[in-house]
Structures are given as C-alpha cells and as structure tokens.
Image (cartoon, helix red, strand yellow):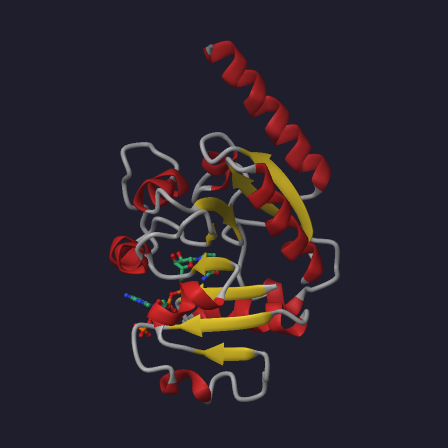
Length: 210
Ligand SMILES: NC(=O)c1ccc[n+]([C@@H]2O[C@H](COP(=O)([O-])OP(=O)(O)OC[C@H]3O[C@@H](n4cnc5c(N)ncnc54)[C@H](OP(=O)(O)O)[C@@H]3O)[C@@H](O)[C@H]2O)c1
C-alpha cells in the first residue's frame, strides 16, 4: 500500500518504520522541510520524506500522527480528502497527558467532523506505540473503529500485514469511545476474550439506554 503519514515525531516515525518493514511505500511529512527527516529514515529505502502538501496525492491511505492541538490546522491544510481513508492515531491529551475535554464526544468523531470528506478509522492509539516495532508477529490485538466497512477492511489488512491482529470494535461513536483515552479498551493490550467481554457488556448498556 502507499501510505502517507502526517507527523514524523515518536508515533509517526515508529508507524512508518513498522509499515516499511512490511513492504509498504511510506511517505511522511512534518511541518518543515523534508530534509529534516532524511537522516531519521536513512536506513529505509521505502520511507520517503516529503513536503506535507505532497502527501495526499502520493498516498492511498493517510495516517494522522500529530498532537491533538495541531489537528485542526493540519486537517484544514490538507483540504478535501475526497473519500480517502484517514487513520486517526491521535489522542485528545495535552503536553502533560491530561485529557482535553471534548464535551464527552469520542475524539475520532471530532476528527471526522474536521475532515468531512475522509473515511476516518481510529487505530494504533490504544497502547504504547513502540510495540508496533518491537512486538511484531506476537499475536497482539490492535483495535480499530470506523463507520465505513471498506475502510475498516483496508486498515485491517494493513494491521495484519505489519504483524498484528485487527479487531473491529464498532463505529466511531461506539468502538471509538471505548478506544478513547481512559476508555475501556485503551491504555494497555488486551486478549480477544477480554475485548469480547468488554464489547458485550457495553453493547448491553447501549440496548438498555435505548
Ligand atoms: N506516544 C504514544 O505511545 C502514542 C500512542 C498512540 C497515539 N499517540 C498520539 O499520537 C499523536 C502524535 O504523538 P507524538 O508523540 O508522535 O508527537 P510528537 O513527537 O510531538 O510529533 C508530532 C509531529 O507532528 C508534526 N506536526 C505538527 N504540526 C504539523 C503540521 N501543521 N503539519 C505537519 N506536521 C505537523 C510535528 O512536526 P515538527 O517536528 O515539524 O513540529 C511532529 O513531527 C498524539 O496525538 C498522541 O497523543 C501517542
């Protein structure tokens, strides 16, 4: 796959390397000249640092790996995403890792609102990012949420390709909420049985609410 990663800090760089090791072509940008990234990715011939305004045209799938405070500007700058898959890796926390209040809304729904023409899939945000490089192929479950079936399938394929087990948690509203910081599926890795049981309990609560 051709993957564009917006943000080349801790998270963007690890995802880029993990995806490149699986054979994907990765285009990655920070807020500056791509030359600032040449050294970081010198050993990876399929990671290509580019200007951020080149990312959309070069990639089939985009991943958003910037801090929450920068999401609005980055998405405004990207403009019309025209049905592209946008993987939301962000967490709504500040520089002290304190939760940023979104009025109780799941953060990826806010991202979907900021990028209305994208097909947003929430992924890669529920445990320490370094695992995506260090623990490939060890059977760890990687949660995803989204409202578009085709996009969920594509991101599932991507997750499998890098050596993790995709697990669809539901829509951005339901699964996305559980995957949010402090959500029941966030903060550490889970077994399939634990995830199944949490999803079952939470689905039952939803039914009672209705
Ligand atoms: N740490 C984890 O284990 C973990 C796990 C899952 C999710 N997350 C989430 O992942 C996100 C990224 O975290 P991080 O630790 O990687 O942050 P980080 O190290 O601070 O990196 C942020 C990156 O975003 C870039 N950026 C900022 N504004 C931009 C713009 N306008 N256009 C293009 N690029 C821009 C920065 O570029 P410059 O260097 O040029 O400023 C930098 O490369 C956060 O939302 C975090 O909550 C973290």
